[in-house]
Image (tube, rainbow, N blue to C red; front, top):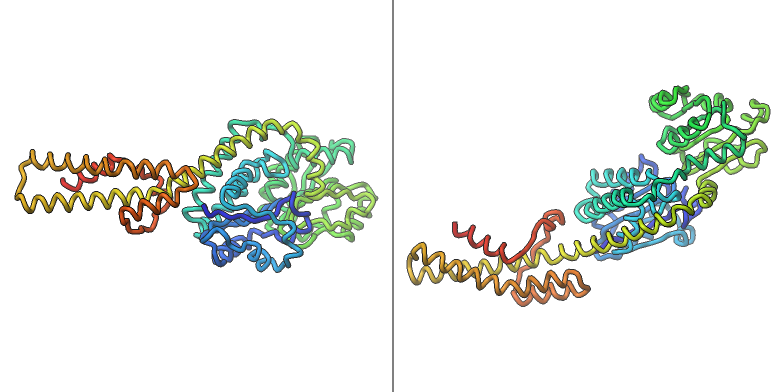
Length: 446
């Protein structure tokens, strides 16, 4: 197991740091390629969301310099970056991926968006070929674990979310949402969800703007709203009481001068900005204006913390599921490690058996059908007995720490040639047993 992971999230790094590490969708493929080409890395993928950036790898020797990769790729110094990083290897990396996919590591525990985001990152890397056998089996299992957590616990049943917290904060500012207008800037899934919550609580109208105008039209249609071309954003924005913004812009699109213009046109009626973009869409200076209320992801996290205590018991149940699934995954990988040796041992002994039968047949001449059956039965029985102890020992050792030592001893004792392991998915279908050896011998005689 040579899994290695490094990253930052909403707990390890402030928004200012996460902004510098954010990878827009347009650059994700190039980042995956750069990662896979980095020394010591066999497979790699990148998960980049508004609350985390993580590099997941399967390495050559279990110790690739992932910190060096991040520093080089993002042009950051160790002083700027290292204090905010977390790093996991082997079983700990597996556990972390299972927790992320199951939304136990999210700002909002149980939120559904993260699983979709991880699946999209996996699909991108798999299409590029930077995810193959090892990471493929890790993430395939992670998705199954996430499904089990969803079905066996109520960790995702609470209504607490960024969207619901945004509604509560808006109510505190305006008193009521009846008749208020909403402006969505950036037609992302999280923005749409927040807008849906706001409209359900009484907001009357909605504007949608996106750099791709067709996407704005499509989202506006869902709410019977009005699509706005991005070039017209600043001339229309002041009509909205609540602005939900989540674009992929590398710089703030709402700055102090924009806020001053909006307030002047609104005659100082307040505006509420929910900024769920990374990097941020709303400059911090906007919050200094009287009448402009801004909440970014870190602000929302603080508001959410006070709402999630009731998820504690369900989260404990989910963590127990994760723990058991990590053990099962590790045991399966260890079992796969011994499969090539068992198969090699079967092939080796079967070769010896066939050679001895051919030698005896050459010396004794043609055998009758009854003699052939007797020889087959005798030699198969001997092979089965010879196979029994090493195969049983290998299967038992697969679950123990000394598995590698036992495998090496068996290979040396029987002088087995090293064979390159096939894909894990193929190896996993091999169920070595004494019956396999006898069946193989029977097939070779037919």
